[in-house]
Image 1 (cartoon, rainbow, N blue to C red):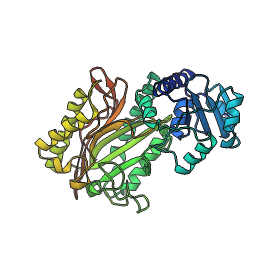
Image 2 (image 1 turned 90 degrees about the vertical axis):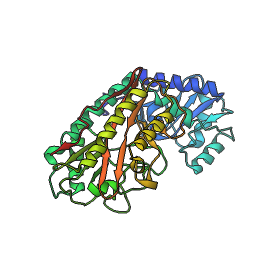
Image 3 (image 1 turned 30 degrees about the horizontal axis):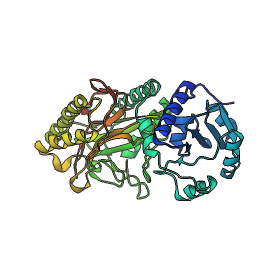
Image 4 (image 1 turned 45 degrees about the horizontal axis):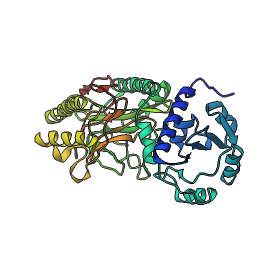
Length: 399
């Protein structure tokens, strides 16, 4: 009934559970209860409505509220049981030979307060330390399996970008071009969902912005915004008609088997002004410098600091990663099952890079009333620096 060919391999799930249990033991936490959808998928292989109980030692239990049969088909967790109500969790644990934990780790960065109090009652007032940061650290270093899927997603990002020259024409609206590109992405297997962890953050496929649209800021934690189709969305492509001699930015995410590739390229109908071409070239050069510096052991915040000094010395400080006071204070971010994973390459961050982290690096300059220039690629952290996964040319493609 269910296609299991794309299931996460059992060896992957086992390794992830092992890493989480090692973390729980290091923290002195008796068990974790995984509820957030992406974490649930990462550790169990399914996003059916379920609670994943991971003891510091022993076999995890996946307790499924809905849909049990599908969870059993998708997950390699050995113990999978029905869960009519969270109030039954203590009974299920006792039947499995577990005592109610004294310290139960929860994902308090995303868990709604009402659910938090409910689970506090279910676990009889057990201490509930926040383990969300440690979970995100576990997820930050990617396995060979994850890297292979992200590599494939990056190839599809290239293929979507390569469609732009044949589709782009003067007078078409941003939303029309976006729709045509999104249809191609779906044809290639885009899952249609781009997951983000930050509360209140959401994204469709990404941002397609032409000319002045590239300089319109929005609420999203991003150097670009765009007006979108209406105030209920307030970001991304609009009904603005694309003109000649202006930058057209395609900042799209390809989502494949849960994993993401973040990718930005610039296009134009005819040449854009020379000062914008120069600014774009500066961002390409900055990307090369950062690719060289971002080795294991590099402090994430130091990469932003270097980028800030680099653009300041070249006169672009008021345009870097947004315009004037609307700038964001990062130059890149981790990518995996979510678009905002560890590590964050932002001011003040002290996390050190590790081999096999995956980072989207996005040096951009925003010019209000004119547009945005810059680049974004998804990269793998290697011993010698960043390996760029997207290969579509970074220079402006003039149609």
